[in-house]
Structures are given as C-alpha cells and as structure tokens.
Length: 349
Image (cartoon, rainbow, N blue to C red; front, side):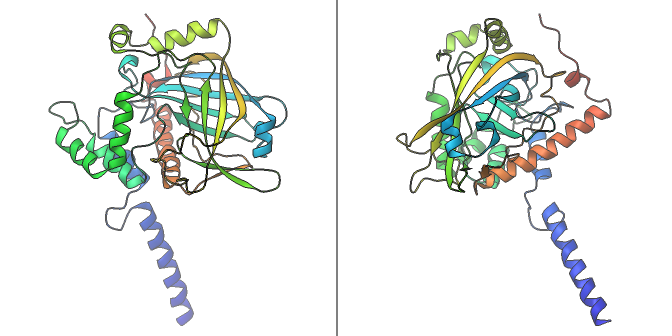
C-alpha cells in the first residue's frame, strides 16, 4: 500500500506540473494560449490568417553560404551548394487587408532547406531591437496597445503608463518616430533581433545577431509619398523589381563582445562590434500567400540546424510557443472550411 501511495503521489505531482505548465492552475500563468487570446481580443477575427503580420506575400530563391560563414558555423547552409529558400515578406499589424503605407514595420521570414532536408527557419523584422526584454513585458505591451472599442485606437493613458514603466519601450518609440521608412521590401534591412550561438567545427560557440542587408540602395518613403502610395504598393513594387531580376541581401553576422546583452533583445549592441558576411540571400519569385508555399509554414525561430543554437533569451521560447499555437488555430480553421479569404487570392485592381 505504501508503494502504491508513493506511485500515486508521483503521478499526482506530474499531473499538477502539467496543469501548471498548461496554465490550468497557478496565479496569472502566462501561457501561449493566454498570450494568443489577448492578441485576438484586440480586433476582429481573420480565420486562417496569421495572428500577427497577416498581410504578406510568398517568395522563393536560394541562399549561398560563404567561407567566412563556414568558419563560424558548421550549419549546412554555409557549406556546399546553394540551399533552396521559401520565405514570406510581410508588414506589421493585424489586418490581412491593411494599408502598406500605414505599416511602420516590415518583416522577412525564411525557411532554408526544403522538405526532407535539414531546415533553418528565421523570423526577422526591420526594427533593430525590441521594446521589452521578457514575455510578460511583451504581454503587458499588447494589453496597453489594445484598441479601445469606443475609438478603435489604444487608450493614451494605458500607453503612457506602459511607457513610463518601461524605459526600453521609450527607446523603441524614439526609433519608430525618427528612423526613415523604406520605400520597398527590397531595400529594407531585416534583423534577427534575438541572439543565437554559431558553433564551428571545433565546437567553439560565438554569440551572434544577424541581419539581411539589402544590396538594393535604400530609398526613404517620406510622409508625402506615404499619403500618395496605394494600399498594396509594396507588392506592386516587389513584382516590378523581380521582373528585372533577382533581389539580394547579404547575411551579416554581428559578433557579441564582452558584456553585451546576449539574452536581452531590447538592448542593442555597440556599433563597433565585428561583422562578418556569412552568406547571400537571393529571391527571384513571388506568389500570393493564399496559394503559395509559405502559407502553411510555421516560421518558428527555434527550428535550427546543427551549428546554430538559441541563446537564453526568454522571448525566443515564447515566440516559438505562440507561433505553434497560432499555426494550429489557423490550420484548424482552414481544415474546417472557415478560411476562404485566407486560401483564395484577392483580385488585384
């Protein structure tokens, strides 16, 4: 009987741990479900679409690794022949029919490697750092920026209170107000923001953040040009540029120095850190996301090849968990036939 009681206690403890992790018990547990529910409560539902950055386009091409990349990491993308790439360009916001000219943030997600191959997935953004350092702070930011049903805009008092309590969010707001807007997806720099470790053939680990830096020259989109731009001008511009040939970005790894905040994505590293061009991304085709290959890919930033490892940044695990739950929800909506808008291309004027 004593042995059975011990087994029962172990089983009960395991069940309790599972319930705590799932968010069924415990005070204000921040789970992926709760996080996603909070995001969805901020506006009307869009079945079948991503819960964040739902407006985008699928792209494809190749990735060419460099010798400098092979010296830093044993990842297969840096060695051998070019690697097939499936990706997605998108804008920030929560509306799949949003106005390109009103979106401050541009994003690039990539899957290096095809089906049956070792894959490396990335989710990068045009901003250089995050406004917060932890998932709970991120959740508070989402709550503070939720639209007021009466106005359709965030409550200024809630936003002010959040900014007052989070100095790094003030720094992010300063960047958003001062940094020039790019006039194209093709000339935008996309940043990993989170840090990772590159591991070479001898097992040496180096903390890095990477960026996809465009070979196309940057051109700013000022307020007047934004007012005149059409709601889908980024897609139109992308198609025009691709008709003239592939678009390319240099993948630049920035190596952390002593004392740099490897696990805090809200703190930029000094500009004098060593930078290494580890590869070249080449995109040569774009297709609507409703029928494109990117639609059913979860661009989980923790899908990593040997030779690349996550840092201890807690935002990485949160992103992976929330992305997975979002993917499952939208795939269920598509399977149930509730996502016609997400699976049929919108007619272009």
